[in-house]
Image 1 (cartoon, helix red, strand yellow):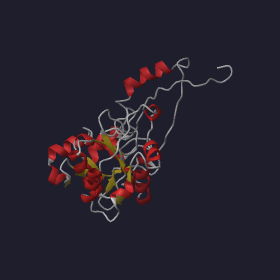
Image 2 (cartoon, one colour):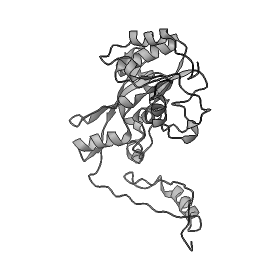
Image 3 (cartoon, one colour):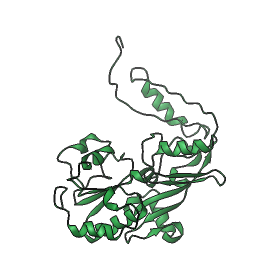
Image 4 (tube, one colour):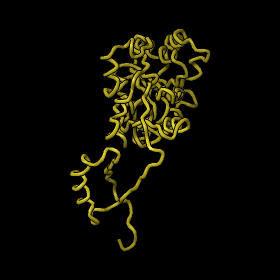
Length: 279
């Protein structure tokens, strides 16, 4: 079913029948003939090549505000043989979170972004639609000496980042993000809401690094906060090839894994867009 096809009334009714929220699922469902469809679709596409007219589009978009919206989406997409793509921050540059060759629906998680920080037990629950920047901000509101080891880009979605492993500047000291996840809420293929105890350790292991969307829809993660200094030092050194960048990279390979775990050095290779006069 292409995005331009007529949506069966039975599918619309199915979504309504399996949703139990006080907010109707129809109010957060966007069909191609809806004026907001394109705006919602494009709002979290980070790779412009997937905005072309030839890019496969979802049959419709659901921006859930309640767990029952997720359950209804999973149950009804299975009944009507539609694939599901799940998008939080949209930073999948291969478009895997919002493009498919087969008929599909898009679950856009941006409405599910609540964050609850508990400094007393040094944990937090964070919904998949939240961004890393929002998570860091909410932690900092409660404590200046707590943090969470994850990425540096503030607009990356928590859902995809954590289920993919979670690489960041504190990994040398605290490991990947997934090493600091202690529970999760997942909607499985049958529409059941599972936590760590009910899903079992095998599935809990799989969603932490194996790509959560391969196994269900991740509603939220429970993370373990880590200790951080109140003040940190950050510096940046930019060198071109002509200025000896190759030598720096060569030396970095010998020291990066041997320095103190509180120090993190990363190499980023960027193109020289423009040069100053005389350079």
